[in-house]
Length: 285
Image (cartoon, rainbow, N blue to C red; front, side, top):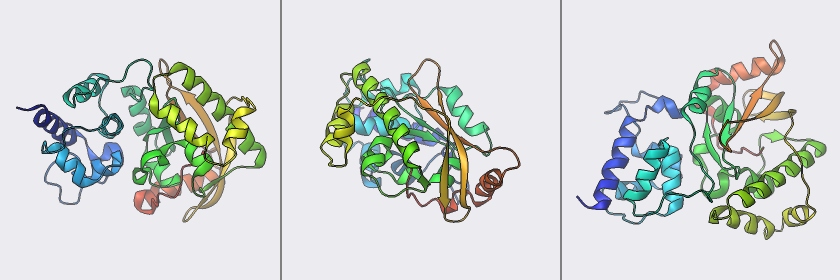
């Protein structure tokens, strides 16, 4: 079988084994198989359904490294599977000089087992790589993001209005910490073309990024509060913490509220509302 045929067969197999509930998709709806539909994988990876069909059928033979990375994230491939995906596509697997996006099984379990806590996971360049259904219900459906729309820095400086608001002081502290993270990532992953391109385009965006970047502003992420204006749950304030996954550059952002507080009640309401109100209108941190 040709290499493109092997790639298509592997993609179909990985898609078929993925439980819809693992990525916040409904399990019913008259499914003929237990896994994800093509439309769902395409949505999660930010690809067109037609292109995914051509990949699976062996009619698209040269997917880019960006497409492969998006598919690996959407299908939740292990590190070995991810490397196999690149080899099937005739591309070298990302080396040590590129931002890794592999999410360890323990982190995946964490997102699924912490009921009622909106959680999201980002790589070293602040690209969104994983989230749970409570986070999607709180912030908006991230599966609709395309290209850089899933990058926190890009959305912070160029994106649309978000459900989450900061005070001027919070905004300044967060951006300083974000600059520090991007500087560290640029040094640690010098071969990552996407990261270099992101920083270059942010500098040329005319949004004030270049001026702030050139000041050398450096900060650290601290626990702070955020205010969210949700279309159905209302306006409330919750705590935001940044956790790191041991042995990786992954960042886990957790939104919590004190037991018995108004915010805790509204977070529980999100569990009832579920994904039916996911409007994809922002994840700006």
